[in-house]
Every structure is written in C-alpha cells, then in structure tokens.
Image (cartoon, rainbow, N blue to C red; front, side, top):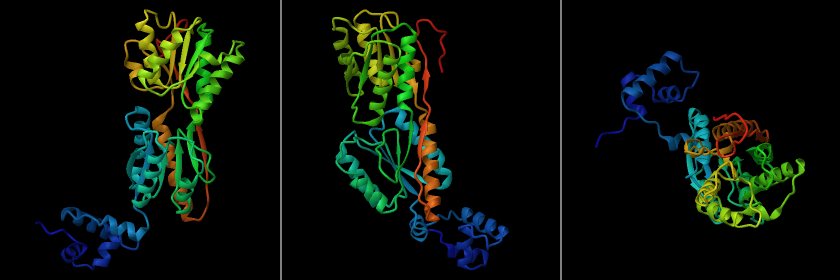
Length: 347
C-alpha cells in the first residue's frame, strides 16, 4: 500500500518547517506568495491531500450543507439544487441531498441526520405545514445552523426564504385564459394548507372575480401532482353537465394528465379546452402539443438561496442576526395548449 504524503514529507523535500507548509497550504498571508506557490506546487506534485476532518475541526465548519426536497425526480427541484451547488461549490461547500416524499416523519429524520453530519446549513422545501409546532426548525436555530426555505415555506421567526410570487403567477395564467376567450376555467389545485398552493388558488380566484366571471368552487378540485391523478380529475370535470372550457393546473404533471384525458375524449386543445400548467418542466416545451406554463426560475432561486446562506454565515461571524424574505417574479410562457388568438411566443 502506497504511503500517504504528509506535510512533513513536503517540509523535508523543501527543507522548511512543517508549520510553514501548513500555513502556506491554508493561505496564510504571513507566508510570502512565492513560498505559498512553491509549497502548493510541491503538494500537487507529491499528490498530497489535506485532511478535511482536521480542517473542519480547526475551522468549526464541515463545508457541507443539506438540501431537503419533497422529491428529486422533478426538474424544478433538481434545478434549484443545481443553482445552490453552482453558487456554493466555488466557496468550498458540498451538498447532501435528502428527500421527504411529502412525509413529515421523513422531514424530521432528515433534519436530525443532517445535524448529526455537522452540516453548516440546511436548505428546505417543506413537506407539509401540518406540524403543530416549529420545534424541529427551532432546534436548528438553537444550534446556530442557518435554515433557508425555498419554494414551499413556513413562517418561522429567524428563518429566511426564497420563493416566487405564486399569486401573481396564477393570476397571469388565469388572465391569459380569459384573454383567449375562456369563461369557465377549472382549477386543478393541490393541498392548500401549503402556502404556494393556497396562493395559486387565490390568484386564480381573484382573476376570475376581477374579470366579472362567475366563480364556481365546484370546478376547483384538489389533486396530487401526478399525471394519472390529472386524468382522473379531468374525467370528472368533463362529465359535468356544464364542463369547463379551460383548465389551470398548479402542476405541469396534472396538466399533462388533463391533456391526455381531453384527447382521449376526442376534444381539441385549445379549440375546445385550453390548458395551462405551472413550473415549466422541460417536457412542456418539447411535446407535440407544447404546454403553456408558469416559469419559476428554479436555478435563480437556488443561486439566491445560496447567496442568502453565505451572507448569513458571514454575518454570524460578526454576531449580526439577519433574516430575508426574497420573492422572485414569475413568467408565463405561452405555448400551443392555450393559444387561440395571440402570436405564439415560445421560450
């Protein structure tokens, strides 16, 4: 087995002290630039690897952060994670990813596991707001571990968040359908105890009211964000005495299910029924019938979340408490599934 190179081996080769090697490798400005370069070049040549555990113990940082999401098999969450990594990796951080599958017990287990792993911070899109207390969140704050909510959040004092204006996105989507001549617009909602889905419902409702249309709660249906559930719900809507002439879904997956069911019933999209989704998943653009959707800028959301974390950790070193609530603006991407009378703009 090949012997691992140590700072003593580098010191012996360069005929300097091990302390000088250590300071040079850690970028100590008291060591001349030429010596630092010589030490680093020699370390590279000798395949030296710094002891990350020792560095973490010395600095009080593990340079690991946790990201907790409901699921990873979603382009939205994968893109947020990419944005976080893009911003943090140049700063020496690595990301540990956990999934909750929308289960509260897994959310708590993930938080505890990340705490045991000594992470320097946690980014989270919550699984559910039903928990009676914020005890597991407060436990993080008491231990001095920054917590950043993104997308799905809960109002917890001392916790920053980065979200989009879900109300505005839903309002724009519904207004677009009204502008296309739609008058009976159904809404495929989701668990409205979760703030983002509540705000999308409220944005949809307000656009209906502002345009003088009848608001009908019977065509607002809560359903899980799955293609099959979208089909089932749409079948229910099409079976009504007065079916809708448009569907606004809080999810691209349920919107896709709606489109499949509409086609299966021999109806035309958007001539008979228009469809708009939410999240701008990649498949919405590349389908034969492209889907209008609200873009959430997930990479930007991840980047800004990471920037908020870096700012908080910098402030913590100065004993300054900070809390930010960043709200990004959504963008409606208009495509074939809803376009009746406008020039197509596909992004």
